[in-house]
Image (cartoon, helix red, strand yellow):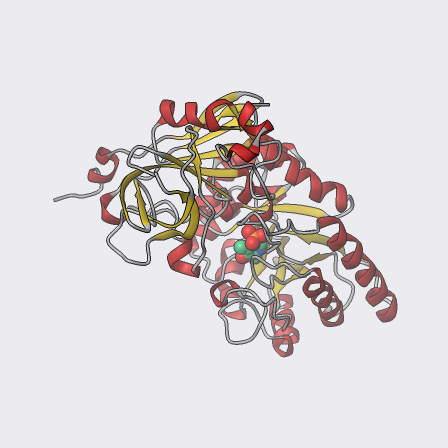
Length: 430
Ligand SMILES: *Cc1c(COP(=O)(O)O)cnc(C)c1O
């Protein structure tokens, strides 16, 4: 423990609060943060900024939480949240299956050694290339989003292809409109009243076998009750005994110090009780539950490191932004950055941390309490950037995407290298 940590009244080093940092993160010497055994200041020096850091220990532990809470369920990692080979193989190691939605994600899974028998393919517009990649890898289950995709599916899939139907459960998870997927008027799934017709259409294709229903009510869902409602509705909609009931993902992750982590155990208890009650009431055998967590496993495993490039009253601009994290522009997301690597007695002042890109919506944090003496060269750490960051990154302003460095038990391993200008120019044919 450092002197500053013992004497927070000095005001030199902000204590670590909240659950948005990777598990086990603690203060290190000289206002460093030690994540899974590795100091972040050293990582920034070694790998440059911006830089995504991912705690393997946190991601594995969060995966184990789901396995422990739901020992009889199949837990699938939502591959779109962090399409990184190492992450997929940690998840497979922890006994999770993989949910994919494109030929690209099938390929990352294949490269990570995930067998097709452990994969589920999603998507509201699966292209022939997606289906061919899935079939070539033997992806066991395909989730049907509409009857219109059945001819293509039947033409490309082998005999005995297992399918689930994605149903709109009409559960409003009360999350951001862009990530609300359980209600009418959004693009995913089949309305409940169309379910019998889609099931009948599947039955007309001899090589497709209906094995279950699927729903996904949204993302960053904080209320366990929304899932309980969903499971009751879904059992009600089962056309008869089916093997699988997939409840999707969407479990919330804390992005700010005051926010709680999702109650996985409470979810497991309440959903399993609801499943048992509804199945008993309908005299149906209980299907196997499937869940598809993405964000709740990897969001808090990740931290992004930035350098401050310029400051003006009330603002600090860093060397990354919407190219490595478009969530602020997409959903109005805001983060809680922290100064790293130097102590200061300067008072905290509300500072809006912005990115380097040519859009005024390129905002990482609004009025974050940061030291008034923040200056170019300072290092900022932004927690909760492990999900949908690398996955959603772009090259806006011809900015190269950052590397992903995993840390575990004091070892740092580059998993995705920093993009170079030659990577970008190689696609421009002149
Ligand atoms: C995005 C998605 C998930 C994962 O959502 P998280 O919020 O990352 O848990 C799971 N299932 C489906 C079908 C999805 O589209």
